[in-house]
Amino acid sequence: MDLITRIHGHFGDSARLKMETMDLLAESIARAAEMMSQSLLSDGKILACGNGGSAADAQHFSSELINRFEMERPGLAAVALTTDSSILTSIANDYEFSQIFSKQVTALGHVGDVLLAISTSGNSRNVVEAIRAAHARDMLVVALTGGSGGQVGELLRDEDINICVPATSTARIQEVHLLTIHCLCDGIDCLILGVE
Image 1 (cartoon, rainbow, N blue to C red):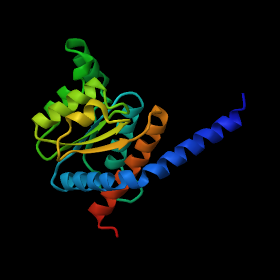
Image 2 (image 1 turned 180 degrees about the vertical axis):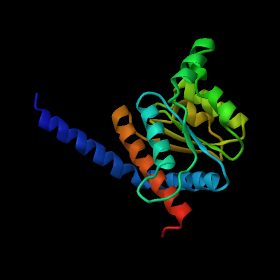
Image 3 (image 1 turned 120 degrees about the vertical axis):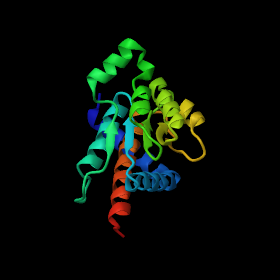
Image 4 (image 1 turned 120 degrees about the horizontal axis):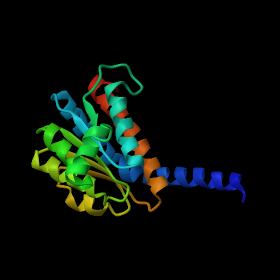
């Protein structure tokens, strides 16, 4: 096995997908940054959720907003719904795992807030339920998905935004999701701070 060749292949595949999807996704990412900025400037907050690597992405996004990304600024309101083990396990135990995010969205979400729903397949049941709960609270949704967008893509409303990576490899989709998160954080900072 030639690991160097495999590593080169991963770098090449990742770079190609990012370049191929740049024009396809740029407008949706910009619209999402504008939506999130408007929410934050109106005293709203962003709730973020996902499973596995997407849970880490939700936490990464929230940490960049609450602390800072690359520019100094006051903290911005963001909550990762993936982090409180007591909440997650009590909901999963008393109800079912598919409700671990939706019950939090119902409790914490308000009109003017935004849900960042992350699912590489677009079919994560608990993320789908979170979107349903967000819609019931009259929240807007920004979804990060892959492939065809799955059930998440079908559930979104016209005013929601689906940033869907047209790929089948979970790793490659997650790599574009991470870049998208950094673009969102940078866009939010530029819009809120008035950077040209």
